[in-house]
Image 1 (tube, rainbow, N blue to C red):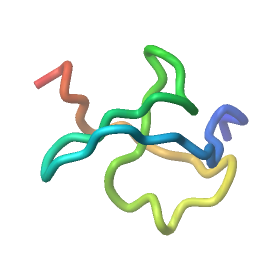
Image 2: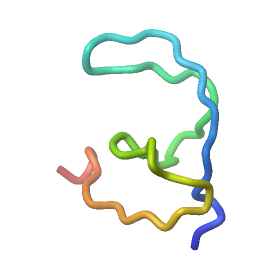
Image 3: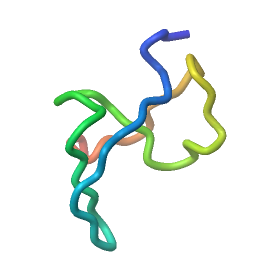
Length: 55
């Protein structure tokens, strides 16, 4: 398990149908879960299957 996998609160600013501006709670370069996150617990083992930068 990776102890860096943890639930973090974020602060949002602007939002539309496809984008959310996050202004606090994550650092540049951190990866986030955008699908299935409701079922995760702290320190859960996750597998990265796709990154927008890799597409």
